[in-house]
Image (cartoon, rainbow, N blue to C red):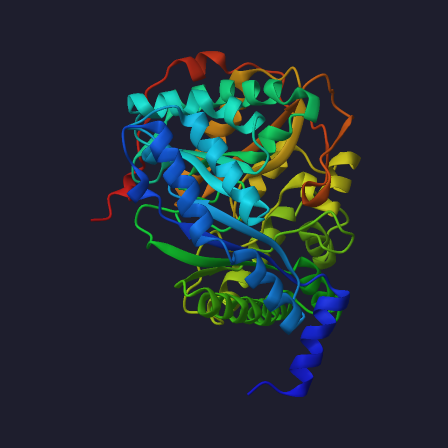
Amino acid sequence: MINPFEIMETINMIREENLDIRTITMGISLLDCIGDDSNICSGKVYDKITSCAEKLVSCGNDIEKEYGIPIINKRISVTPISIVAQSSGDYVKFARAMDKAAKEVGVNFIGGYSALVHKGYTKGDEEFINSIPEALSTTNLVCSSVNIGSTRSGINMDAVGKMGNIIKDTAKASEKDAGFACAKLVVFCNAVPDNPFMAGAFHGVGEGECVINVGVSGPGVVKCALEKVKDGDFGVIADTIKKTAFKITRMGQLVATEASKRLGVPFGIVDLSLAPTPAVGDSVAYILEEIGLEKCGAPGTTAALALLNDAVKKGGTMASSYVGGLSGAFIPVSEDAGMIAAARSGALSLEKLEAMTCVCSVGIDMVVVPGDTTADTISGIIADEAAIGMINSKTTAVRLIPACGKKVGDTVEFGGLLGSGPVMPVSKYNCSEFIARGGRIPAPLHSLKN
C-alpha cells in the first residue's frame, strides 16, 4: 500500500529535488525491413518507425499530466543500421529516413545508427562506419554508436584506429555547430542491447519486435537524502543511497508499466542510472562532494563513486525485476554542473575521469578536447577505456568532441541537456606507433567461462 507520506515525499522529490523520468525509449526491430533496394528498404524503415511510435509522445505526455511525473525525453532505438542496410548499401539514406520518422512522431532522439565490430569488420561494416560523419552532420535527431570490443572477443584495434579518424571527421563536418555531431556518437566496449539512453541506444538483435524501456534519474534526490545524514559513516551513506534508489526506481517501474499497457507494447527494462543535467543541484559530482570531497576529482573521488554506483544498483534491483541498460551513475562532463565546475577549476582531469570510469556506468563521456587533438590520440583514449571495460566485464564508452579552433580553457556551448563543455587538456605524448599495429587485443583469460 502507498501511504500519504510516500505520496508527499515523491511530490517533494519532483518539485524541489529534480526527480524525473529521463526517458521513455521505444525499441523497434527493423529486421523485417532488410532487402537489396535502398529506396524500398529505407521507405520500410520510415513506415515501421512511424507506425510503431505514432502514439509514443502523446502517451508520455498523458502519463506526465496524470501522475505529475516529469518525463523529459521520448526516444526511439532501432536495430543497428549496419545490419539492416548491409544488403542494400547507401547508409546515409537510412539515416535520413530515421531522422524524418523521428521528426514525424515528435521524439527527441533516435538511436541505432550503429555497428557491432568488436571482433571484426564485414565489408558493409567498414562502408557504414565511413558514412557516420555525413550521416550525423546532415541529420538532427539521429544518434550513432560503434561497439569495438567485448570481454568475450577482445578489442578490435583496427576499428579503434578507424574511430579516431571518424570522430575527427565528424567534428570537422559539424564545425559550424561546435562539433555537435560528435555529441551524437559514442564508441563502446561491451555495449548492451537494451540501453534507453542516448547516444548509445540501439535495439539489439536478441530483443523482441517492439519494447518499452525507461531510464530514471535523480542525482538531486540522492544529494538531498545525504544532506540529512551528514554525520553518518559509510554504512549509513550506502544505506541511505540504497533506500533512495529504491524509491526512484519504483517510480520508473510505474511509468514503464503504464506506458507499456497504454501502447500495447511489452515492457523491457528500467535503467536506474543517475543521469545528471546542467541544472544546479542535479549533479553526480555534487553527490560525491556531499560524501566529503572538497571538489570532484580530489583524492577519494573514485572510492566515493564506487560506493555510490554499488548502492544505486543494490537499491534499484530490489525495486524492479527487470533492471537493465547501463544502470549506475553517469559522469558526462558537459551535462553535469559539478563536473563542469571541477574541470574548469583543474580538479578534474582526463586521467582522473578514466580512473572513475573503472567503477561507474560508462566512460569518458561528453568531454571536449582541443581541436588539434590528433586522431591517434583519440584512438588511444578509446583503447584505454575499452581495456577497462574488457578486463572488468563492464560497459565503457567514449564520447569525445574535438572542438575545431578551440584550445584548453575555452568553453563550448551545446545547450539543453548537453550543457557546456570546458576544453580539457590531453596528453602531449604520442601513441601513433601503438595504434598503427592494428589487429586484435586478445580477450582476457576470465572470458573463458563456459
